[in-house]
Image (tube, rainbow, N blue to C red; front, side):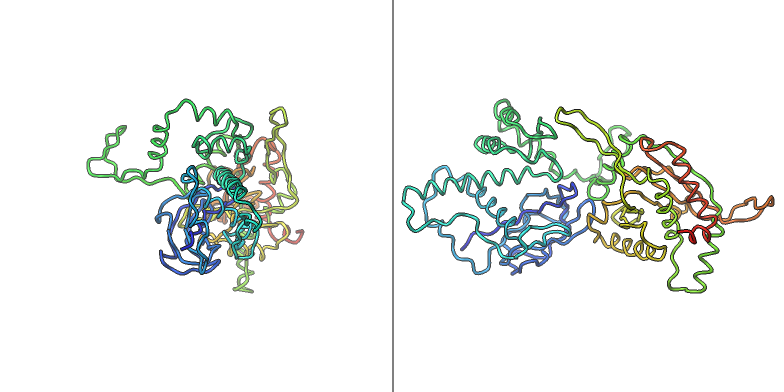
Length: 487
């Protein structure tokens, strides 16, 4: 029987390094084909089906539903359909190769995945080959090779495979620390050091030789597994008599912070810690906008944009007049390690909007929103809302915004000092539209009033720019006909 191919959880991109296994779509013993969905996983950004790059029989499912898996760790083992028995099975194994056989096999699978995968691993990502047929990357032994040359070639292949696996285990999307020298990787392999557990001391987290040497000498090997085992263990379930030590109250439950909630918590914490934000707000008489939409709906009930689409149109126009709010601050380091910042401006607006889902708050973005009409914006907002609520949004749809519009009025609230969606520099909130007393032409009247709230990064602009943008959007809502005519 041939050796199963081990499919590792693929590189998810967009800085995502883990995923929660939601549901298996296959079982041990099932026959599967190339690109057949085998599991549903939930990342911090979306729910996706993972297809198999191999055809054959399911041998092992590496994980249980609800478990969080790291990128680069085994997901499923598949026995290839009709594959010949591996010739190496009849050969005596070298004395020192016993501990490396699993490493050798996993590394070879990784190379096969990279060179000949289906190209359909995850939405927006995948292996580069796109052929759906796995190819062996190990060099074939020539017919004229001598008996002495064969063991040498086999050792070289085994060392390279183990080296490749160590490199793969330290590939962290978006981090330079994933790339380390072959010398360091070989030193780690020879001494049994797990590079995935090391914090690099070099630039951008680069793992240096001194880091591996420090891991080799001081700490007894028997003590190292204790901490990871404790960290990976699930939180103990609350039981009768479980009492919180600080409050003295009984604990009724424990919920792990993961998935979307974990991503939101990390992003909001980073936003608060890095961005010196300020907030301005204004009450707006939206009566004319509400009446204009009502008239359009009466004339064409099935193709009238929602109020949010009109406001989105005003926002994109305002960002063209005040482009400072449609930027991003990027920190860079020169060769000497000196950090500097620059404000990056964009040719266009990707307008994000907050959408509440069963998985939490998601912020999909309408790409090139500044080029769309109110009707086109409405259609795209509706489409993206349905996509994120189904958990099918791609990382590009969730991570490409340049400014965010947040309609918290749907929750029945008037205002909110929103947190900026890092790494953007501004977010505009819209409260509920309600009847309020308002002075019109010197007389008191009942009008449709809402509150606009702008939170902005004070590093990119001052109050004059923020106030000018906010006032532009407010004036457009109060006089929508004239503004739309000019767009």
